[in-house]
Length: 132
Image (cartoon, rainbow, N blue to C red; front, side, top):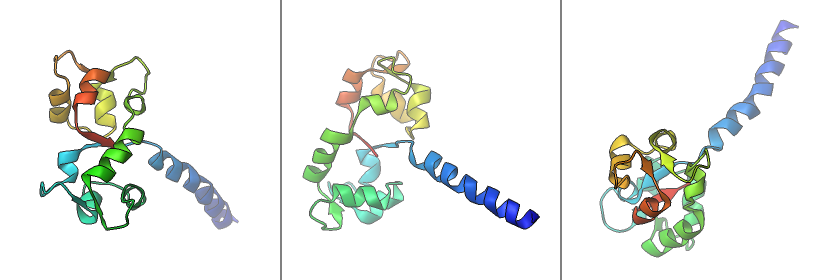
């Protein structure tokens, strides 16, 4: 009976664990994705940078196995929302919010052009980032 109880309890936790892992968006600089700097993102480059295969397939509209600048720009125009990172909805991205989404401290410093400890919408728009 204990075994059945343990199995049922474990099974009940699986959806919670899977849901919690898949709901946090991730942000990555385009230069991180394009590791060899050839202006094309191969599937291997994308997966190594942590992009889920489903996201890669969604961006790779022509199913060529690589993401072109045009495909990336089209995806970013619809999915590069500042508000996805601004979790406290105060109109700016704190270092904690950015790092929680996967941005490094160095990347944060680059985007925080006025060094006030926050990334504004204007600063975000000057960056070269992707969210998935």
